[in-house]
Amino acid sequence: MRLSVDSSSLAKRYVQEDGSEKVDNLLQSALELGLCIILVPEIVSGLNRRLREGALVLADYRKAKRQLLEDVRDATMLQVTPAVVSRSVKLLENNILRAMDALHVACALEWQADIFVTSDRKQFVAAKNAGLRSEYVGQQDV
Image 1 (cartoon, rainbow, N blue to C red):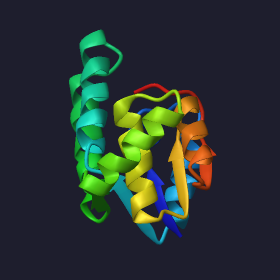
Image 2: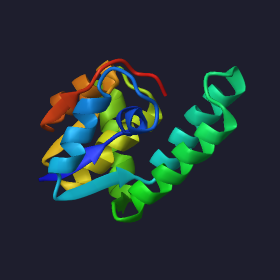
Image 3: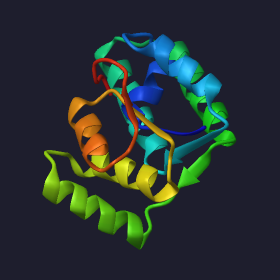
């Protein structure tokens, strides 16, 4: 199975919350993992926010960042190409969606993912509307 996961869902591997176990199970069943190129900075941004707010200590931040970089090493990093930008514009015109969320969905569409996983309800709806088989895995937190 070709699995595409957005930032809000992959972050559940590094911060335990609703949906973390489901994300791990989906990742284990994937034959290929496709991640939008913006995913790493988005997750690092969320981890840094948690660090600033005191919800994460420095040692745990470093551990989570190290695991993130190991996790993405073997993934296909999906690029923001002209075709992805075009798809994201259509997604934005037809859905209530943030620009970065549209890029994740557009990358998954362009890569022809079998399943797209998100923890963002609006992104989930947009992915379904675009014809992607999608899984929703809990509350958005990053």
